[in-house]
Image 1 (cartoon, rainbow, N blue to C red):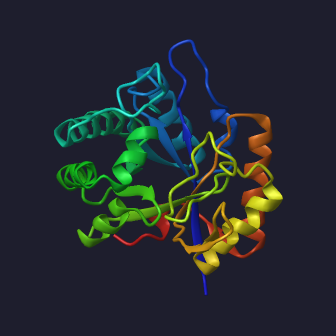
Image 2 (spheres, rainbow, N blue to C red; image 1 turned 60 degrees about the vertical axis):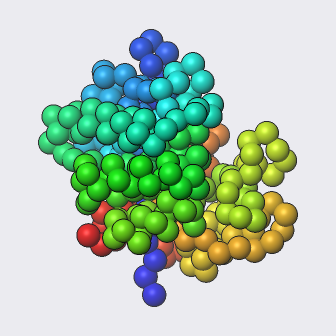
Length: 258
């Protein structure tokens, strides 16, 4: 049996003179990027430069729309109506598409950011507003969402292209959600621990939770972070280990049917 997986990372999250992340380094290891669209981070010049960099490296581009919350980096929960969610989505995705087009490419996918991502996973009204927006904007656009979430299941029911995302460096709760960043077990920092976990997710469709229980999970794309030099080594070891295991690491467009 052949196994495929995408490696994605959130980049382009600097703003003006403020630099965040090691974009030029992390892009060497991933197959897809999630590019900030100016609401939680990023700005027009960074969006433009990052689209150019991705095109040069042969890495597929995804929009990473967040809440309009620069000071909170999009991680603070906001009381957002379905109408607002749809508008935020379309505004940001449309802006990034212009830069992608200017560099001779298109968007492969969209992945919500931070609190927007977490809330839309299982808030049915918000999730349906996002799914409506995808259908209105471009039905071929891949929607990258938390594996096993309401939005993943509903998106598939609608016939949309859904990529179920897992996290190499995060702990899981029994319901398939991620362990709160403030709690013990939220992070997996050792690549020697993360690699077999990820392989098991891909090949067996299982993951062990922070409480030691085994749950079902689907892994189309693995989110990796490259915010510091140690994390870059983590990503390198992970990618090399997946390839050694016979898993093809490639962009979503290569194996998710249209």
